[in-house]
Amino acid sequence: MSKQTKMEIEELRKNLNESIKESIKDFETAIKLDPKYFMAYNNLAEVYDNLGKHKKAKEILAKKPKEI
Image (cartoon, rainbow, N blue to C red):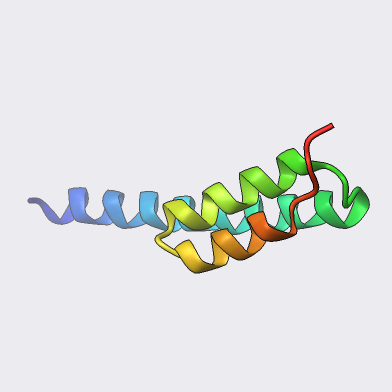
């Protein structure tokens, strides 16, 4: 793999990590603004689950209100 390719991959990883952090903040904000918005809980839990943080995802889902 060329040095350029490695640099491009590293830049993609950095951008992905920033996007994930932003998504987490956005879902947390949505929950604070409307604690009954169950889809924000689902989406936040999915992000954590995809990161391999299964315990955190389960904790979030346990707080989720029932669907309307």
